[in-house]
Length: 480
Ligand code: NAP
Image (cartoon, rainbow, N blue to C red; front, side, top):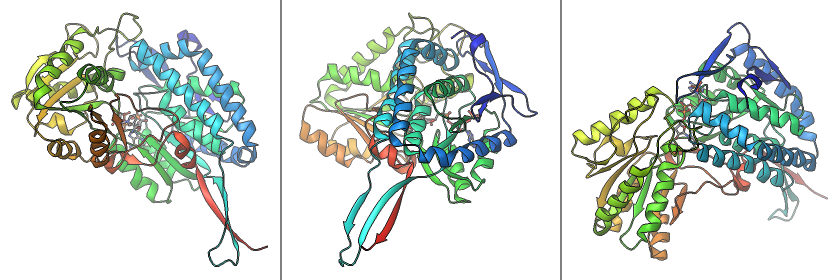
């Protein structure tokens, strides 16, 4: 997609329009710092215009035949797939991720349109006879209504389609507020949805650098009935407070701190392959990223050696360069935070097996890093790293591994590698996480319920559960 063709206005009521008085903000390529585009900087008044459009379109969209909503979503799947390469390039430019990751994201993003195109016709209700026998209990599902969707920069396409797909399938209308690091992909998705036949007002996109004010205003508009947020736990907490004022229905996909457990009976080749995916998908900038490796003592040295060898082989470079396997981090603040976590761990006794600093090149890069002998109290084990760093700690017993894995306020995903299926299932049951990768380093799947427990979130995206998150049950007590 040449930069001259990029849509850069707010997308309201089916049209790209300029923001109110506030003007525009720049979008940068994190590999070079170059300005790629300047995008409309939406204000509160713009966001409320978007809510007007979504509210005006809501009744007609909710009344559209499910088969018709399905057809539009399946068309959006086809269009996204046809444009996969240009979308991947756009993602890579504004987000920095390497092209293989960007291509994988587009395929993943498109699948949410396909899955929810298929699910749109399956919002089944139920009918039962009341236990007392006097009446029937009839349950149907109604769209929640106007939804505000707030997405992060790390998967700018997939986090948007993971919300838009089920919302549209359920018959809801939406206002999407994408991350200000990556607004261009969201605008490109709005174009695709329009071309697929989504009527004006059903999907609106408000790009803005005033996220707090814009989202707060929408959450305090009584026409808004749902917030679906993906981002940090810190901002999630703020938005839960905001949503409480009007008792807005919330789905929260928040931060993670995934433990990756390797037992001595695991197939070590498979464990290292899985570790590379769980750690390095998206250059480590994923909520599902393995944040800490807990390895049983007899295989700890061998696992560390093999993982470090694989990490050291990775080629860093601009995401859009086909030779790159790891792109830059999204901005300088992220590089600084990753550096601080590594330095803190090293100061507390960790040993750098590979990497450990910024490479000798311009741009927001950090070397793929493996740390051994990490102190159990190190900050790097408690905070989301969101970069290419793998800290390793050693355990002696299964109980110790489970206790260490659960010692976090997060509960998104955990990975377990073992050759003993009974142990895998037992440990999986004991782990306080919403998702478990059992001998598997990748859990994300549009057909599966993605989401966390504890402070990693509320609700599920994907699978049939994802559709139900955009529906309210309506019960009719009926006698005939
Ligand atoms: P973030 O800082 O929480 O931002 C997420 C979104 O919230 C962005 O659109 C941001 O807009 C907006 N925002 C920021 N402050 C806000 C406020 N006061 N009110 C309303 N909206 C506000 O997260 P991020 O750095 O973009 O993304 C990384 C985080 O997302 C990580 O913690 C990661 O684990 C999490 N994540 C979770 C999942 C999951 O499924 N559980 C998936 C992906 C990422 P601006 O960009 O304009 O600030």
